[in-house]
Length: 145
Image 1 (cartoon, one colour):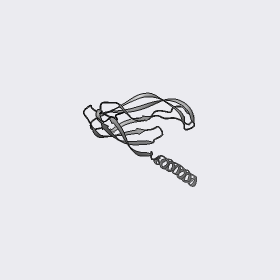
Image 2: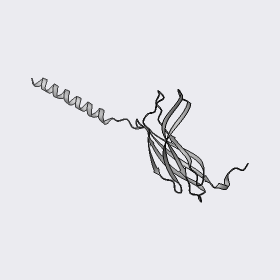
Image 3: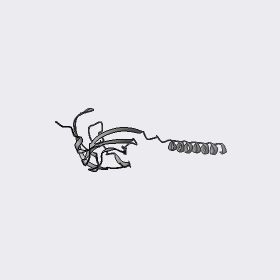
Image 4: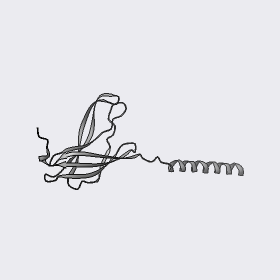
């Protein structure tokens, strides 16, 4: 009887230890950093990003969470809800899904480079850090025809 009691105790302890170690092992979310440059004109909204989630069956998944990690020094960033339409995207011949669109706007007197960082967290744990440099030109820098 004592041996059976000890075996059961060892078996229960082994299961508990196995469960604890399985809970302790969590997959580390995948994080990537992307650096981009965008051209903009002063005092005009310029699209700096579009964020959506298209599932393999061409429907929309949950939209990502967007956070402004470091704001631009001169301009402002605004995120708006939109509908994204696309054709021939991966295996999808045509789709229309909800999306977030990020815009940057510099003050009228600002000319030069401005930078910002956006964190985009997708469902499933994937995180993308976007370091965006915005090169702002004045109204006189437009191309003449």
